[in-house]
Length: 66
Image (cartoon, rainbow, N blue to C red):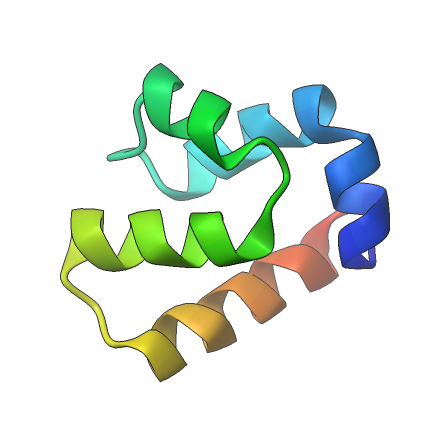
């Protein structure tokens, strides 16, 4: 699924997002609202992971969405 589709289906996708990254709060999901840059920033904060690793992880996760 491309990022425009993810953003457009954010309510449905956010459940899968929370399943993948359990440290995300409801507030985080509301703040992100389909914005990839915000997602990557929040993941970096929550997991203490570097920017390139987060970018790669988000790419892989997006590929699994149907």
